[in-house]
Length: 79
Image (cartoon, rainbow, N blue to C red):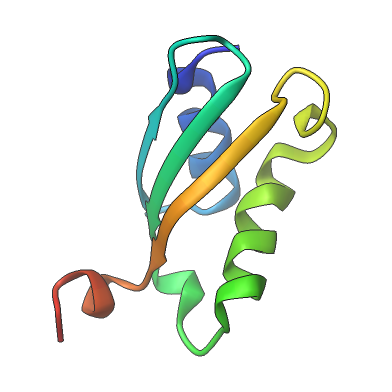
């Protein structure tokens, strides 16, 4: 597994999002996701939305994904 593949999967599940994924060991990754779909949702729900885009890969091919940022565009802009 690589960061680009994870980024593409998140984008498929959250179209229009801005996504950055890093990780260099092939199983542990960090993601920053900015999406309008997060509007009105608490942090835990936002994280669940991101994890849902990866489905069965979580805990298998992707051992760990730390979501370091899950914000709406307004939040990311500091509004």
